[in-house]
Amino acid sequence: MAASVLACTLLLTTASQATTTSSVDLAITGNTVAGYTKAQHGQELPVVFTIKNLSTTTAASVSFYFTLTHATAGASDYTCPLISNHYNINPDTPACEPGVLGYGRSTSAAIMVNPTIYSGTVTVKACAQDLDGYSDPVSSNNCKTVSIAIG
Image (tube, rainbow, N blue to C red; front, side, top):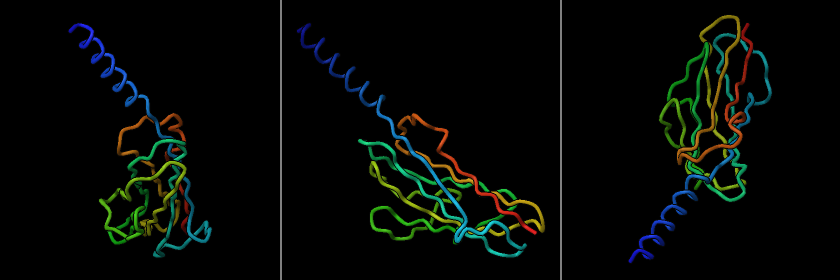
């Protein structure tokens, strides 16, 4: 009986440790569509971001989380295609949750922002988030900020 309890305890401990030691390295890149660097007040500004799962073994449910400075965007200004079938969905603003991203794979989302300033800089920041709660060994590449001069 004691041997069975010990074996069960070891099995559960090992399984628990395996679950908590899994990690997924997500990385994000981003840029303005067509590479523009400056725009006028009143123009819609498209920006695209790509999340890549750099893991070699683990898929993860991912989201893009957007933060805007000196700009606005409505729910219809997000382009958020599902990973599984590329069907564009309505996002849970300010996030876009495209689904499960396989290891070694990437997915993109875009946002159209409107400046609220007449001169200065608009920033659009997107962060890659792992909704499964895996640790990320290189969290420094999880966010990307794109800056656009206005004036």
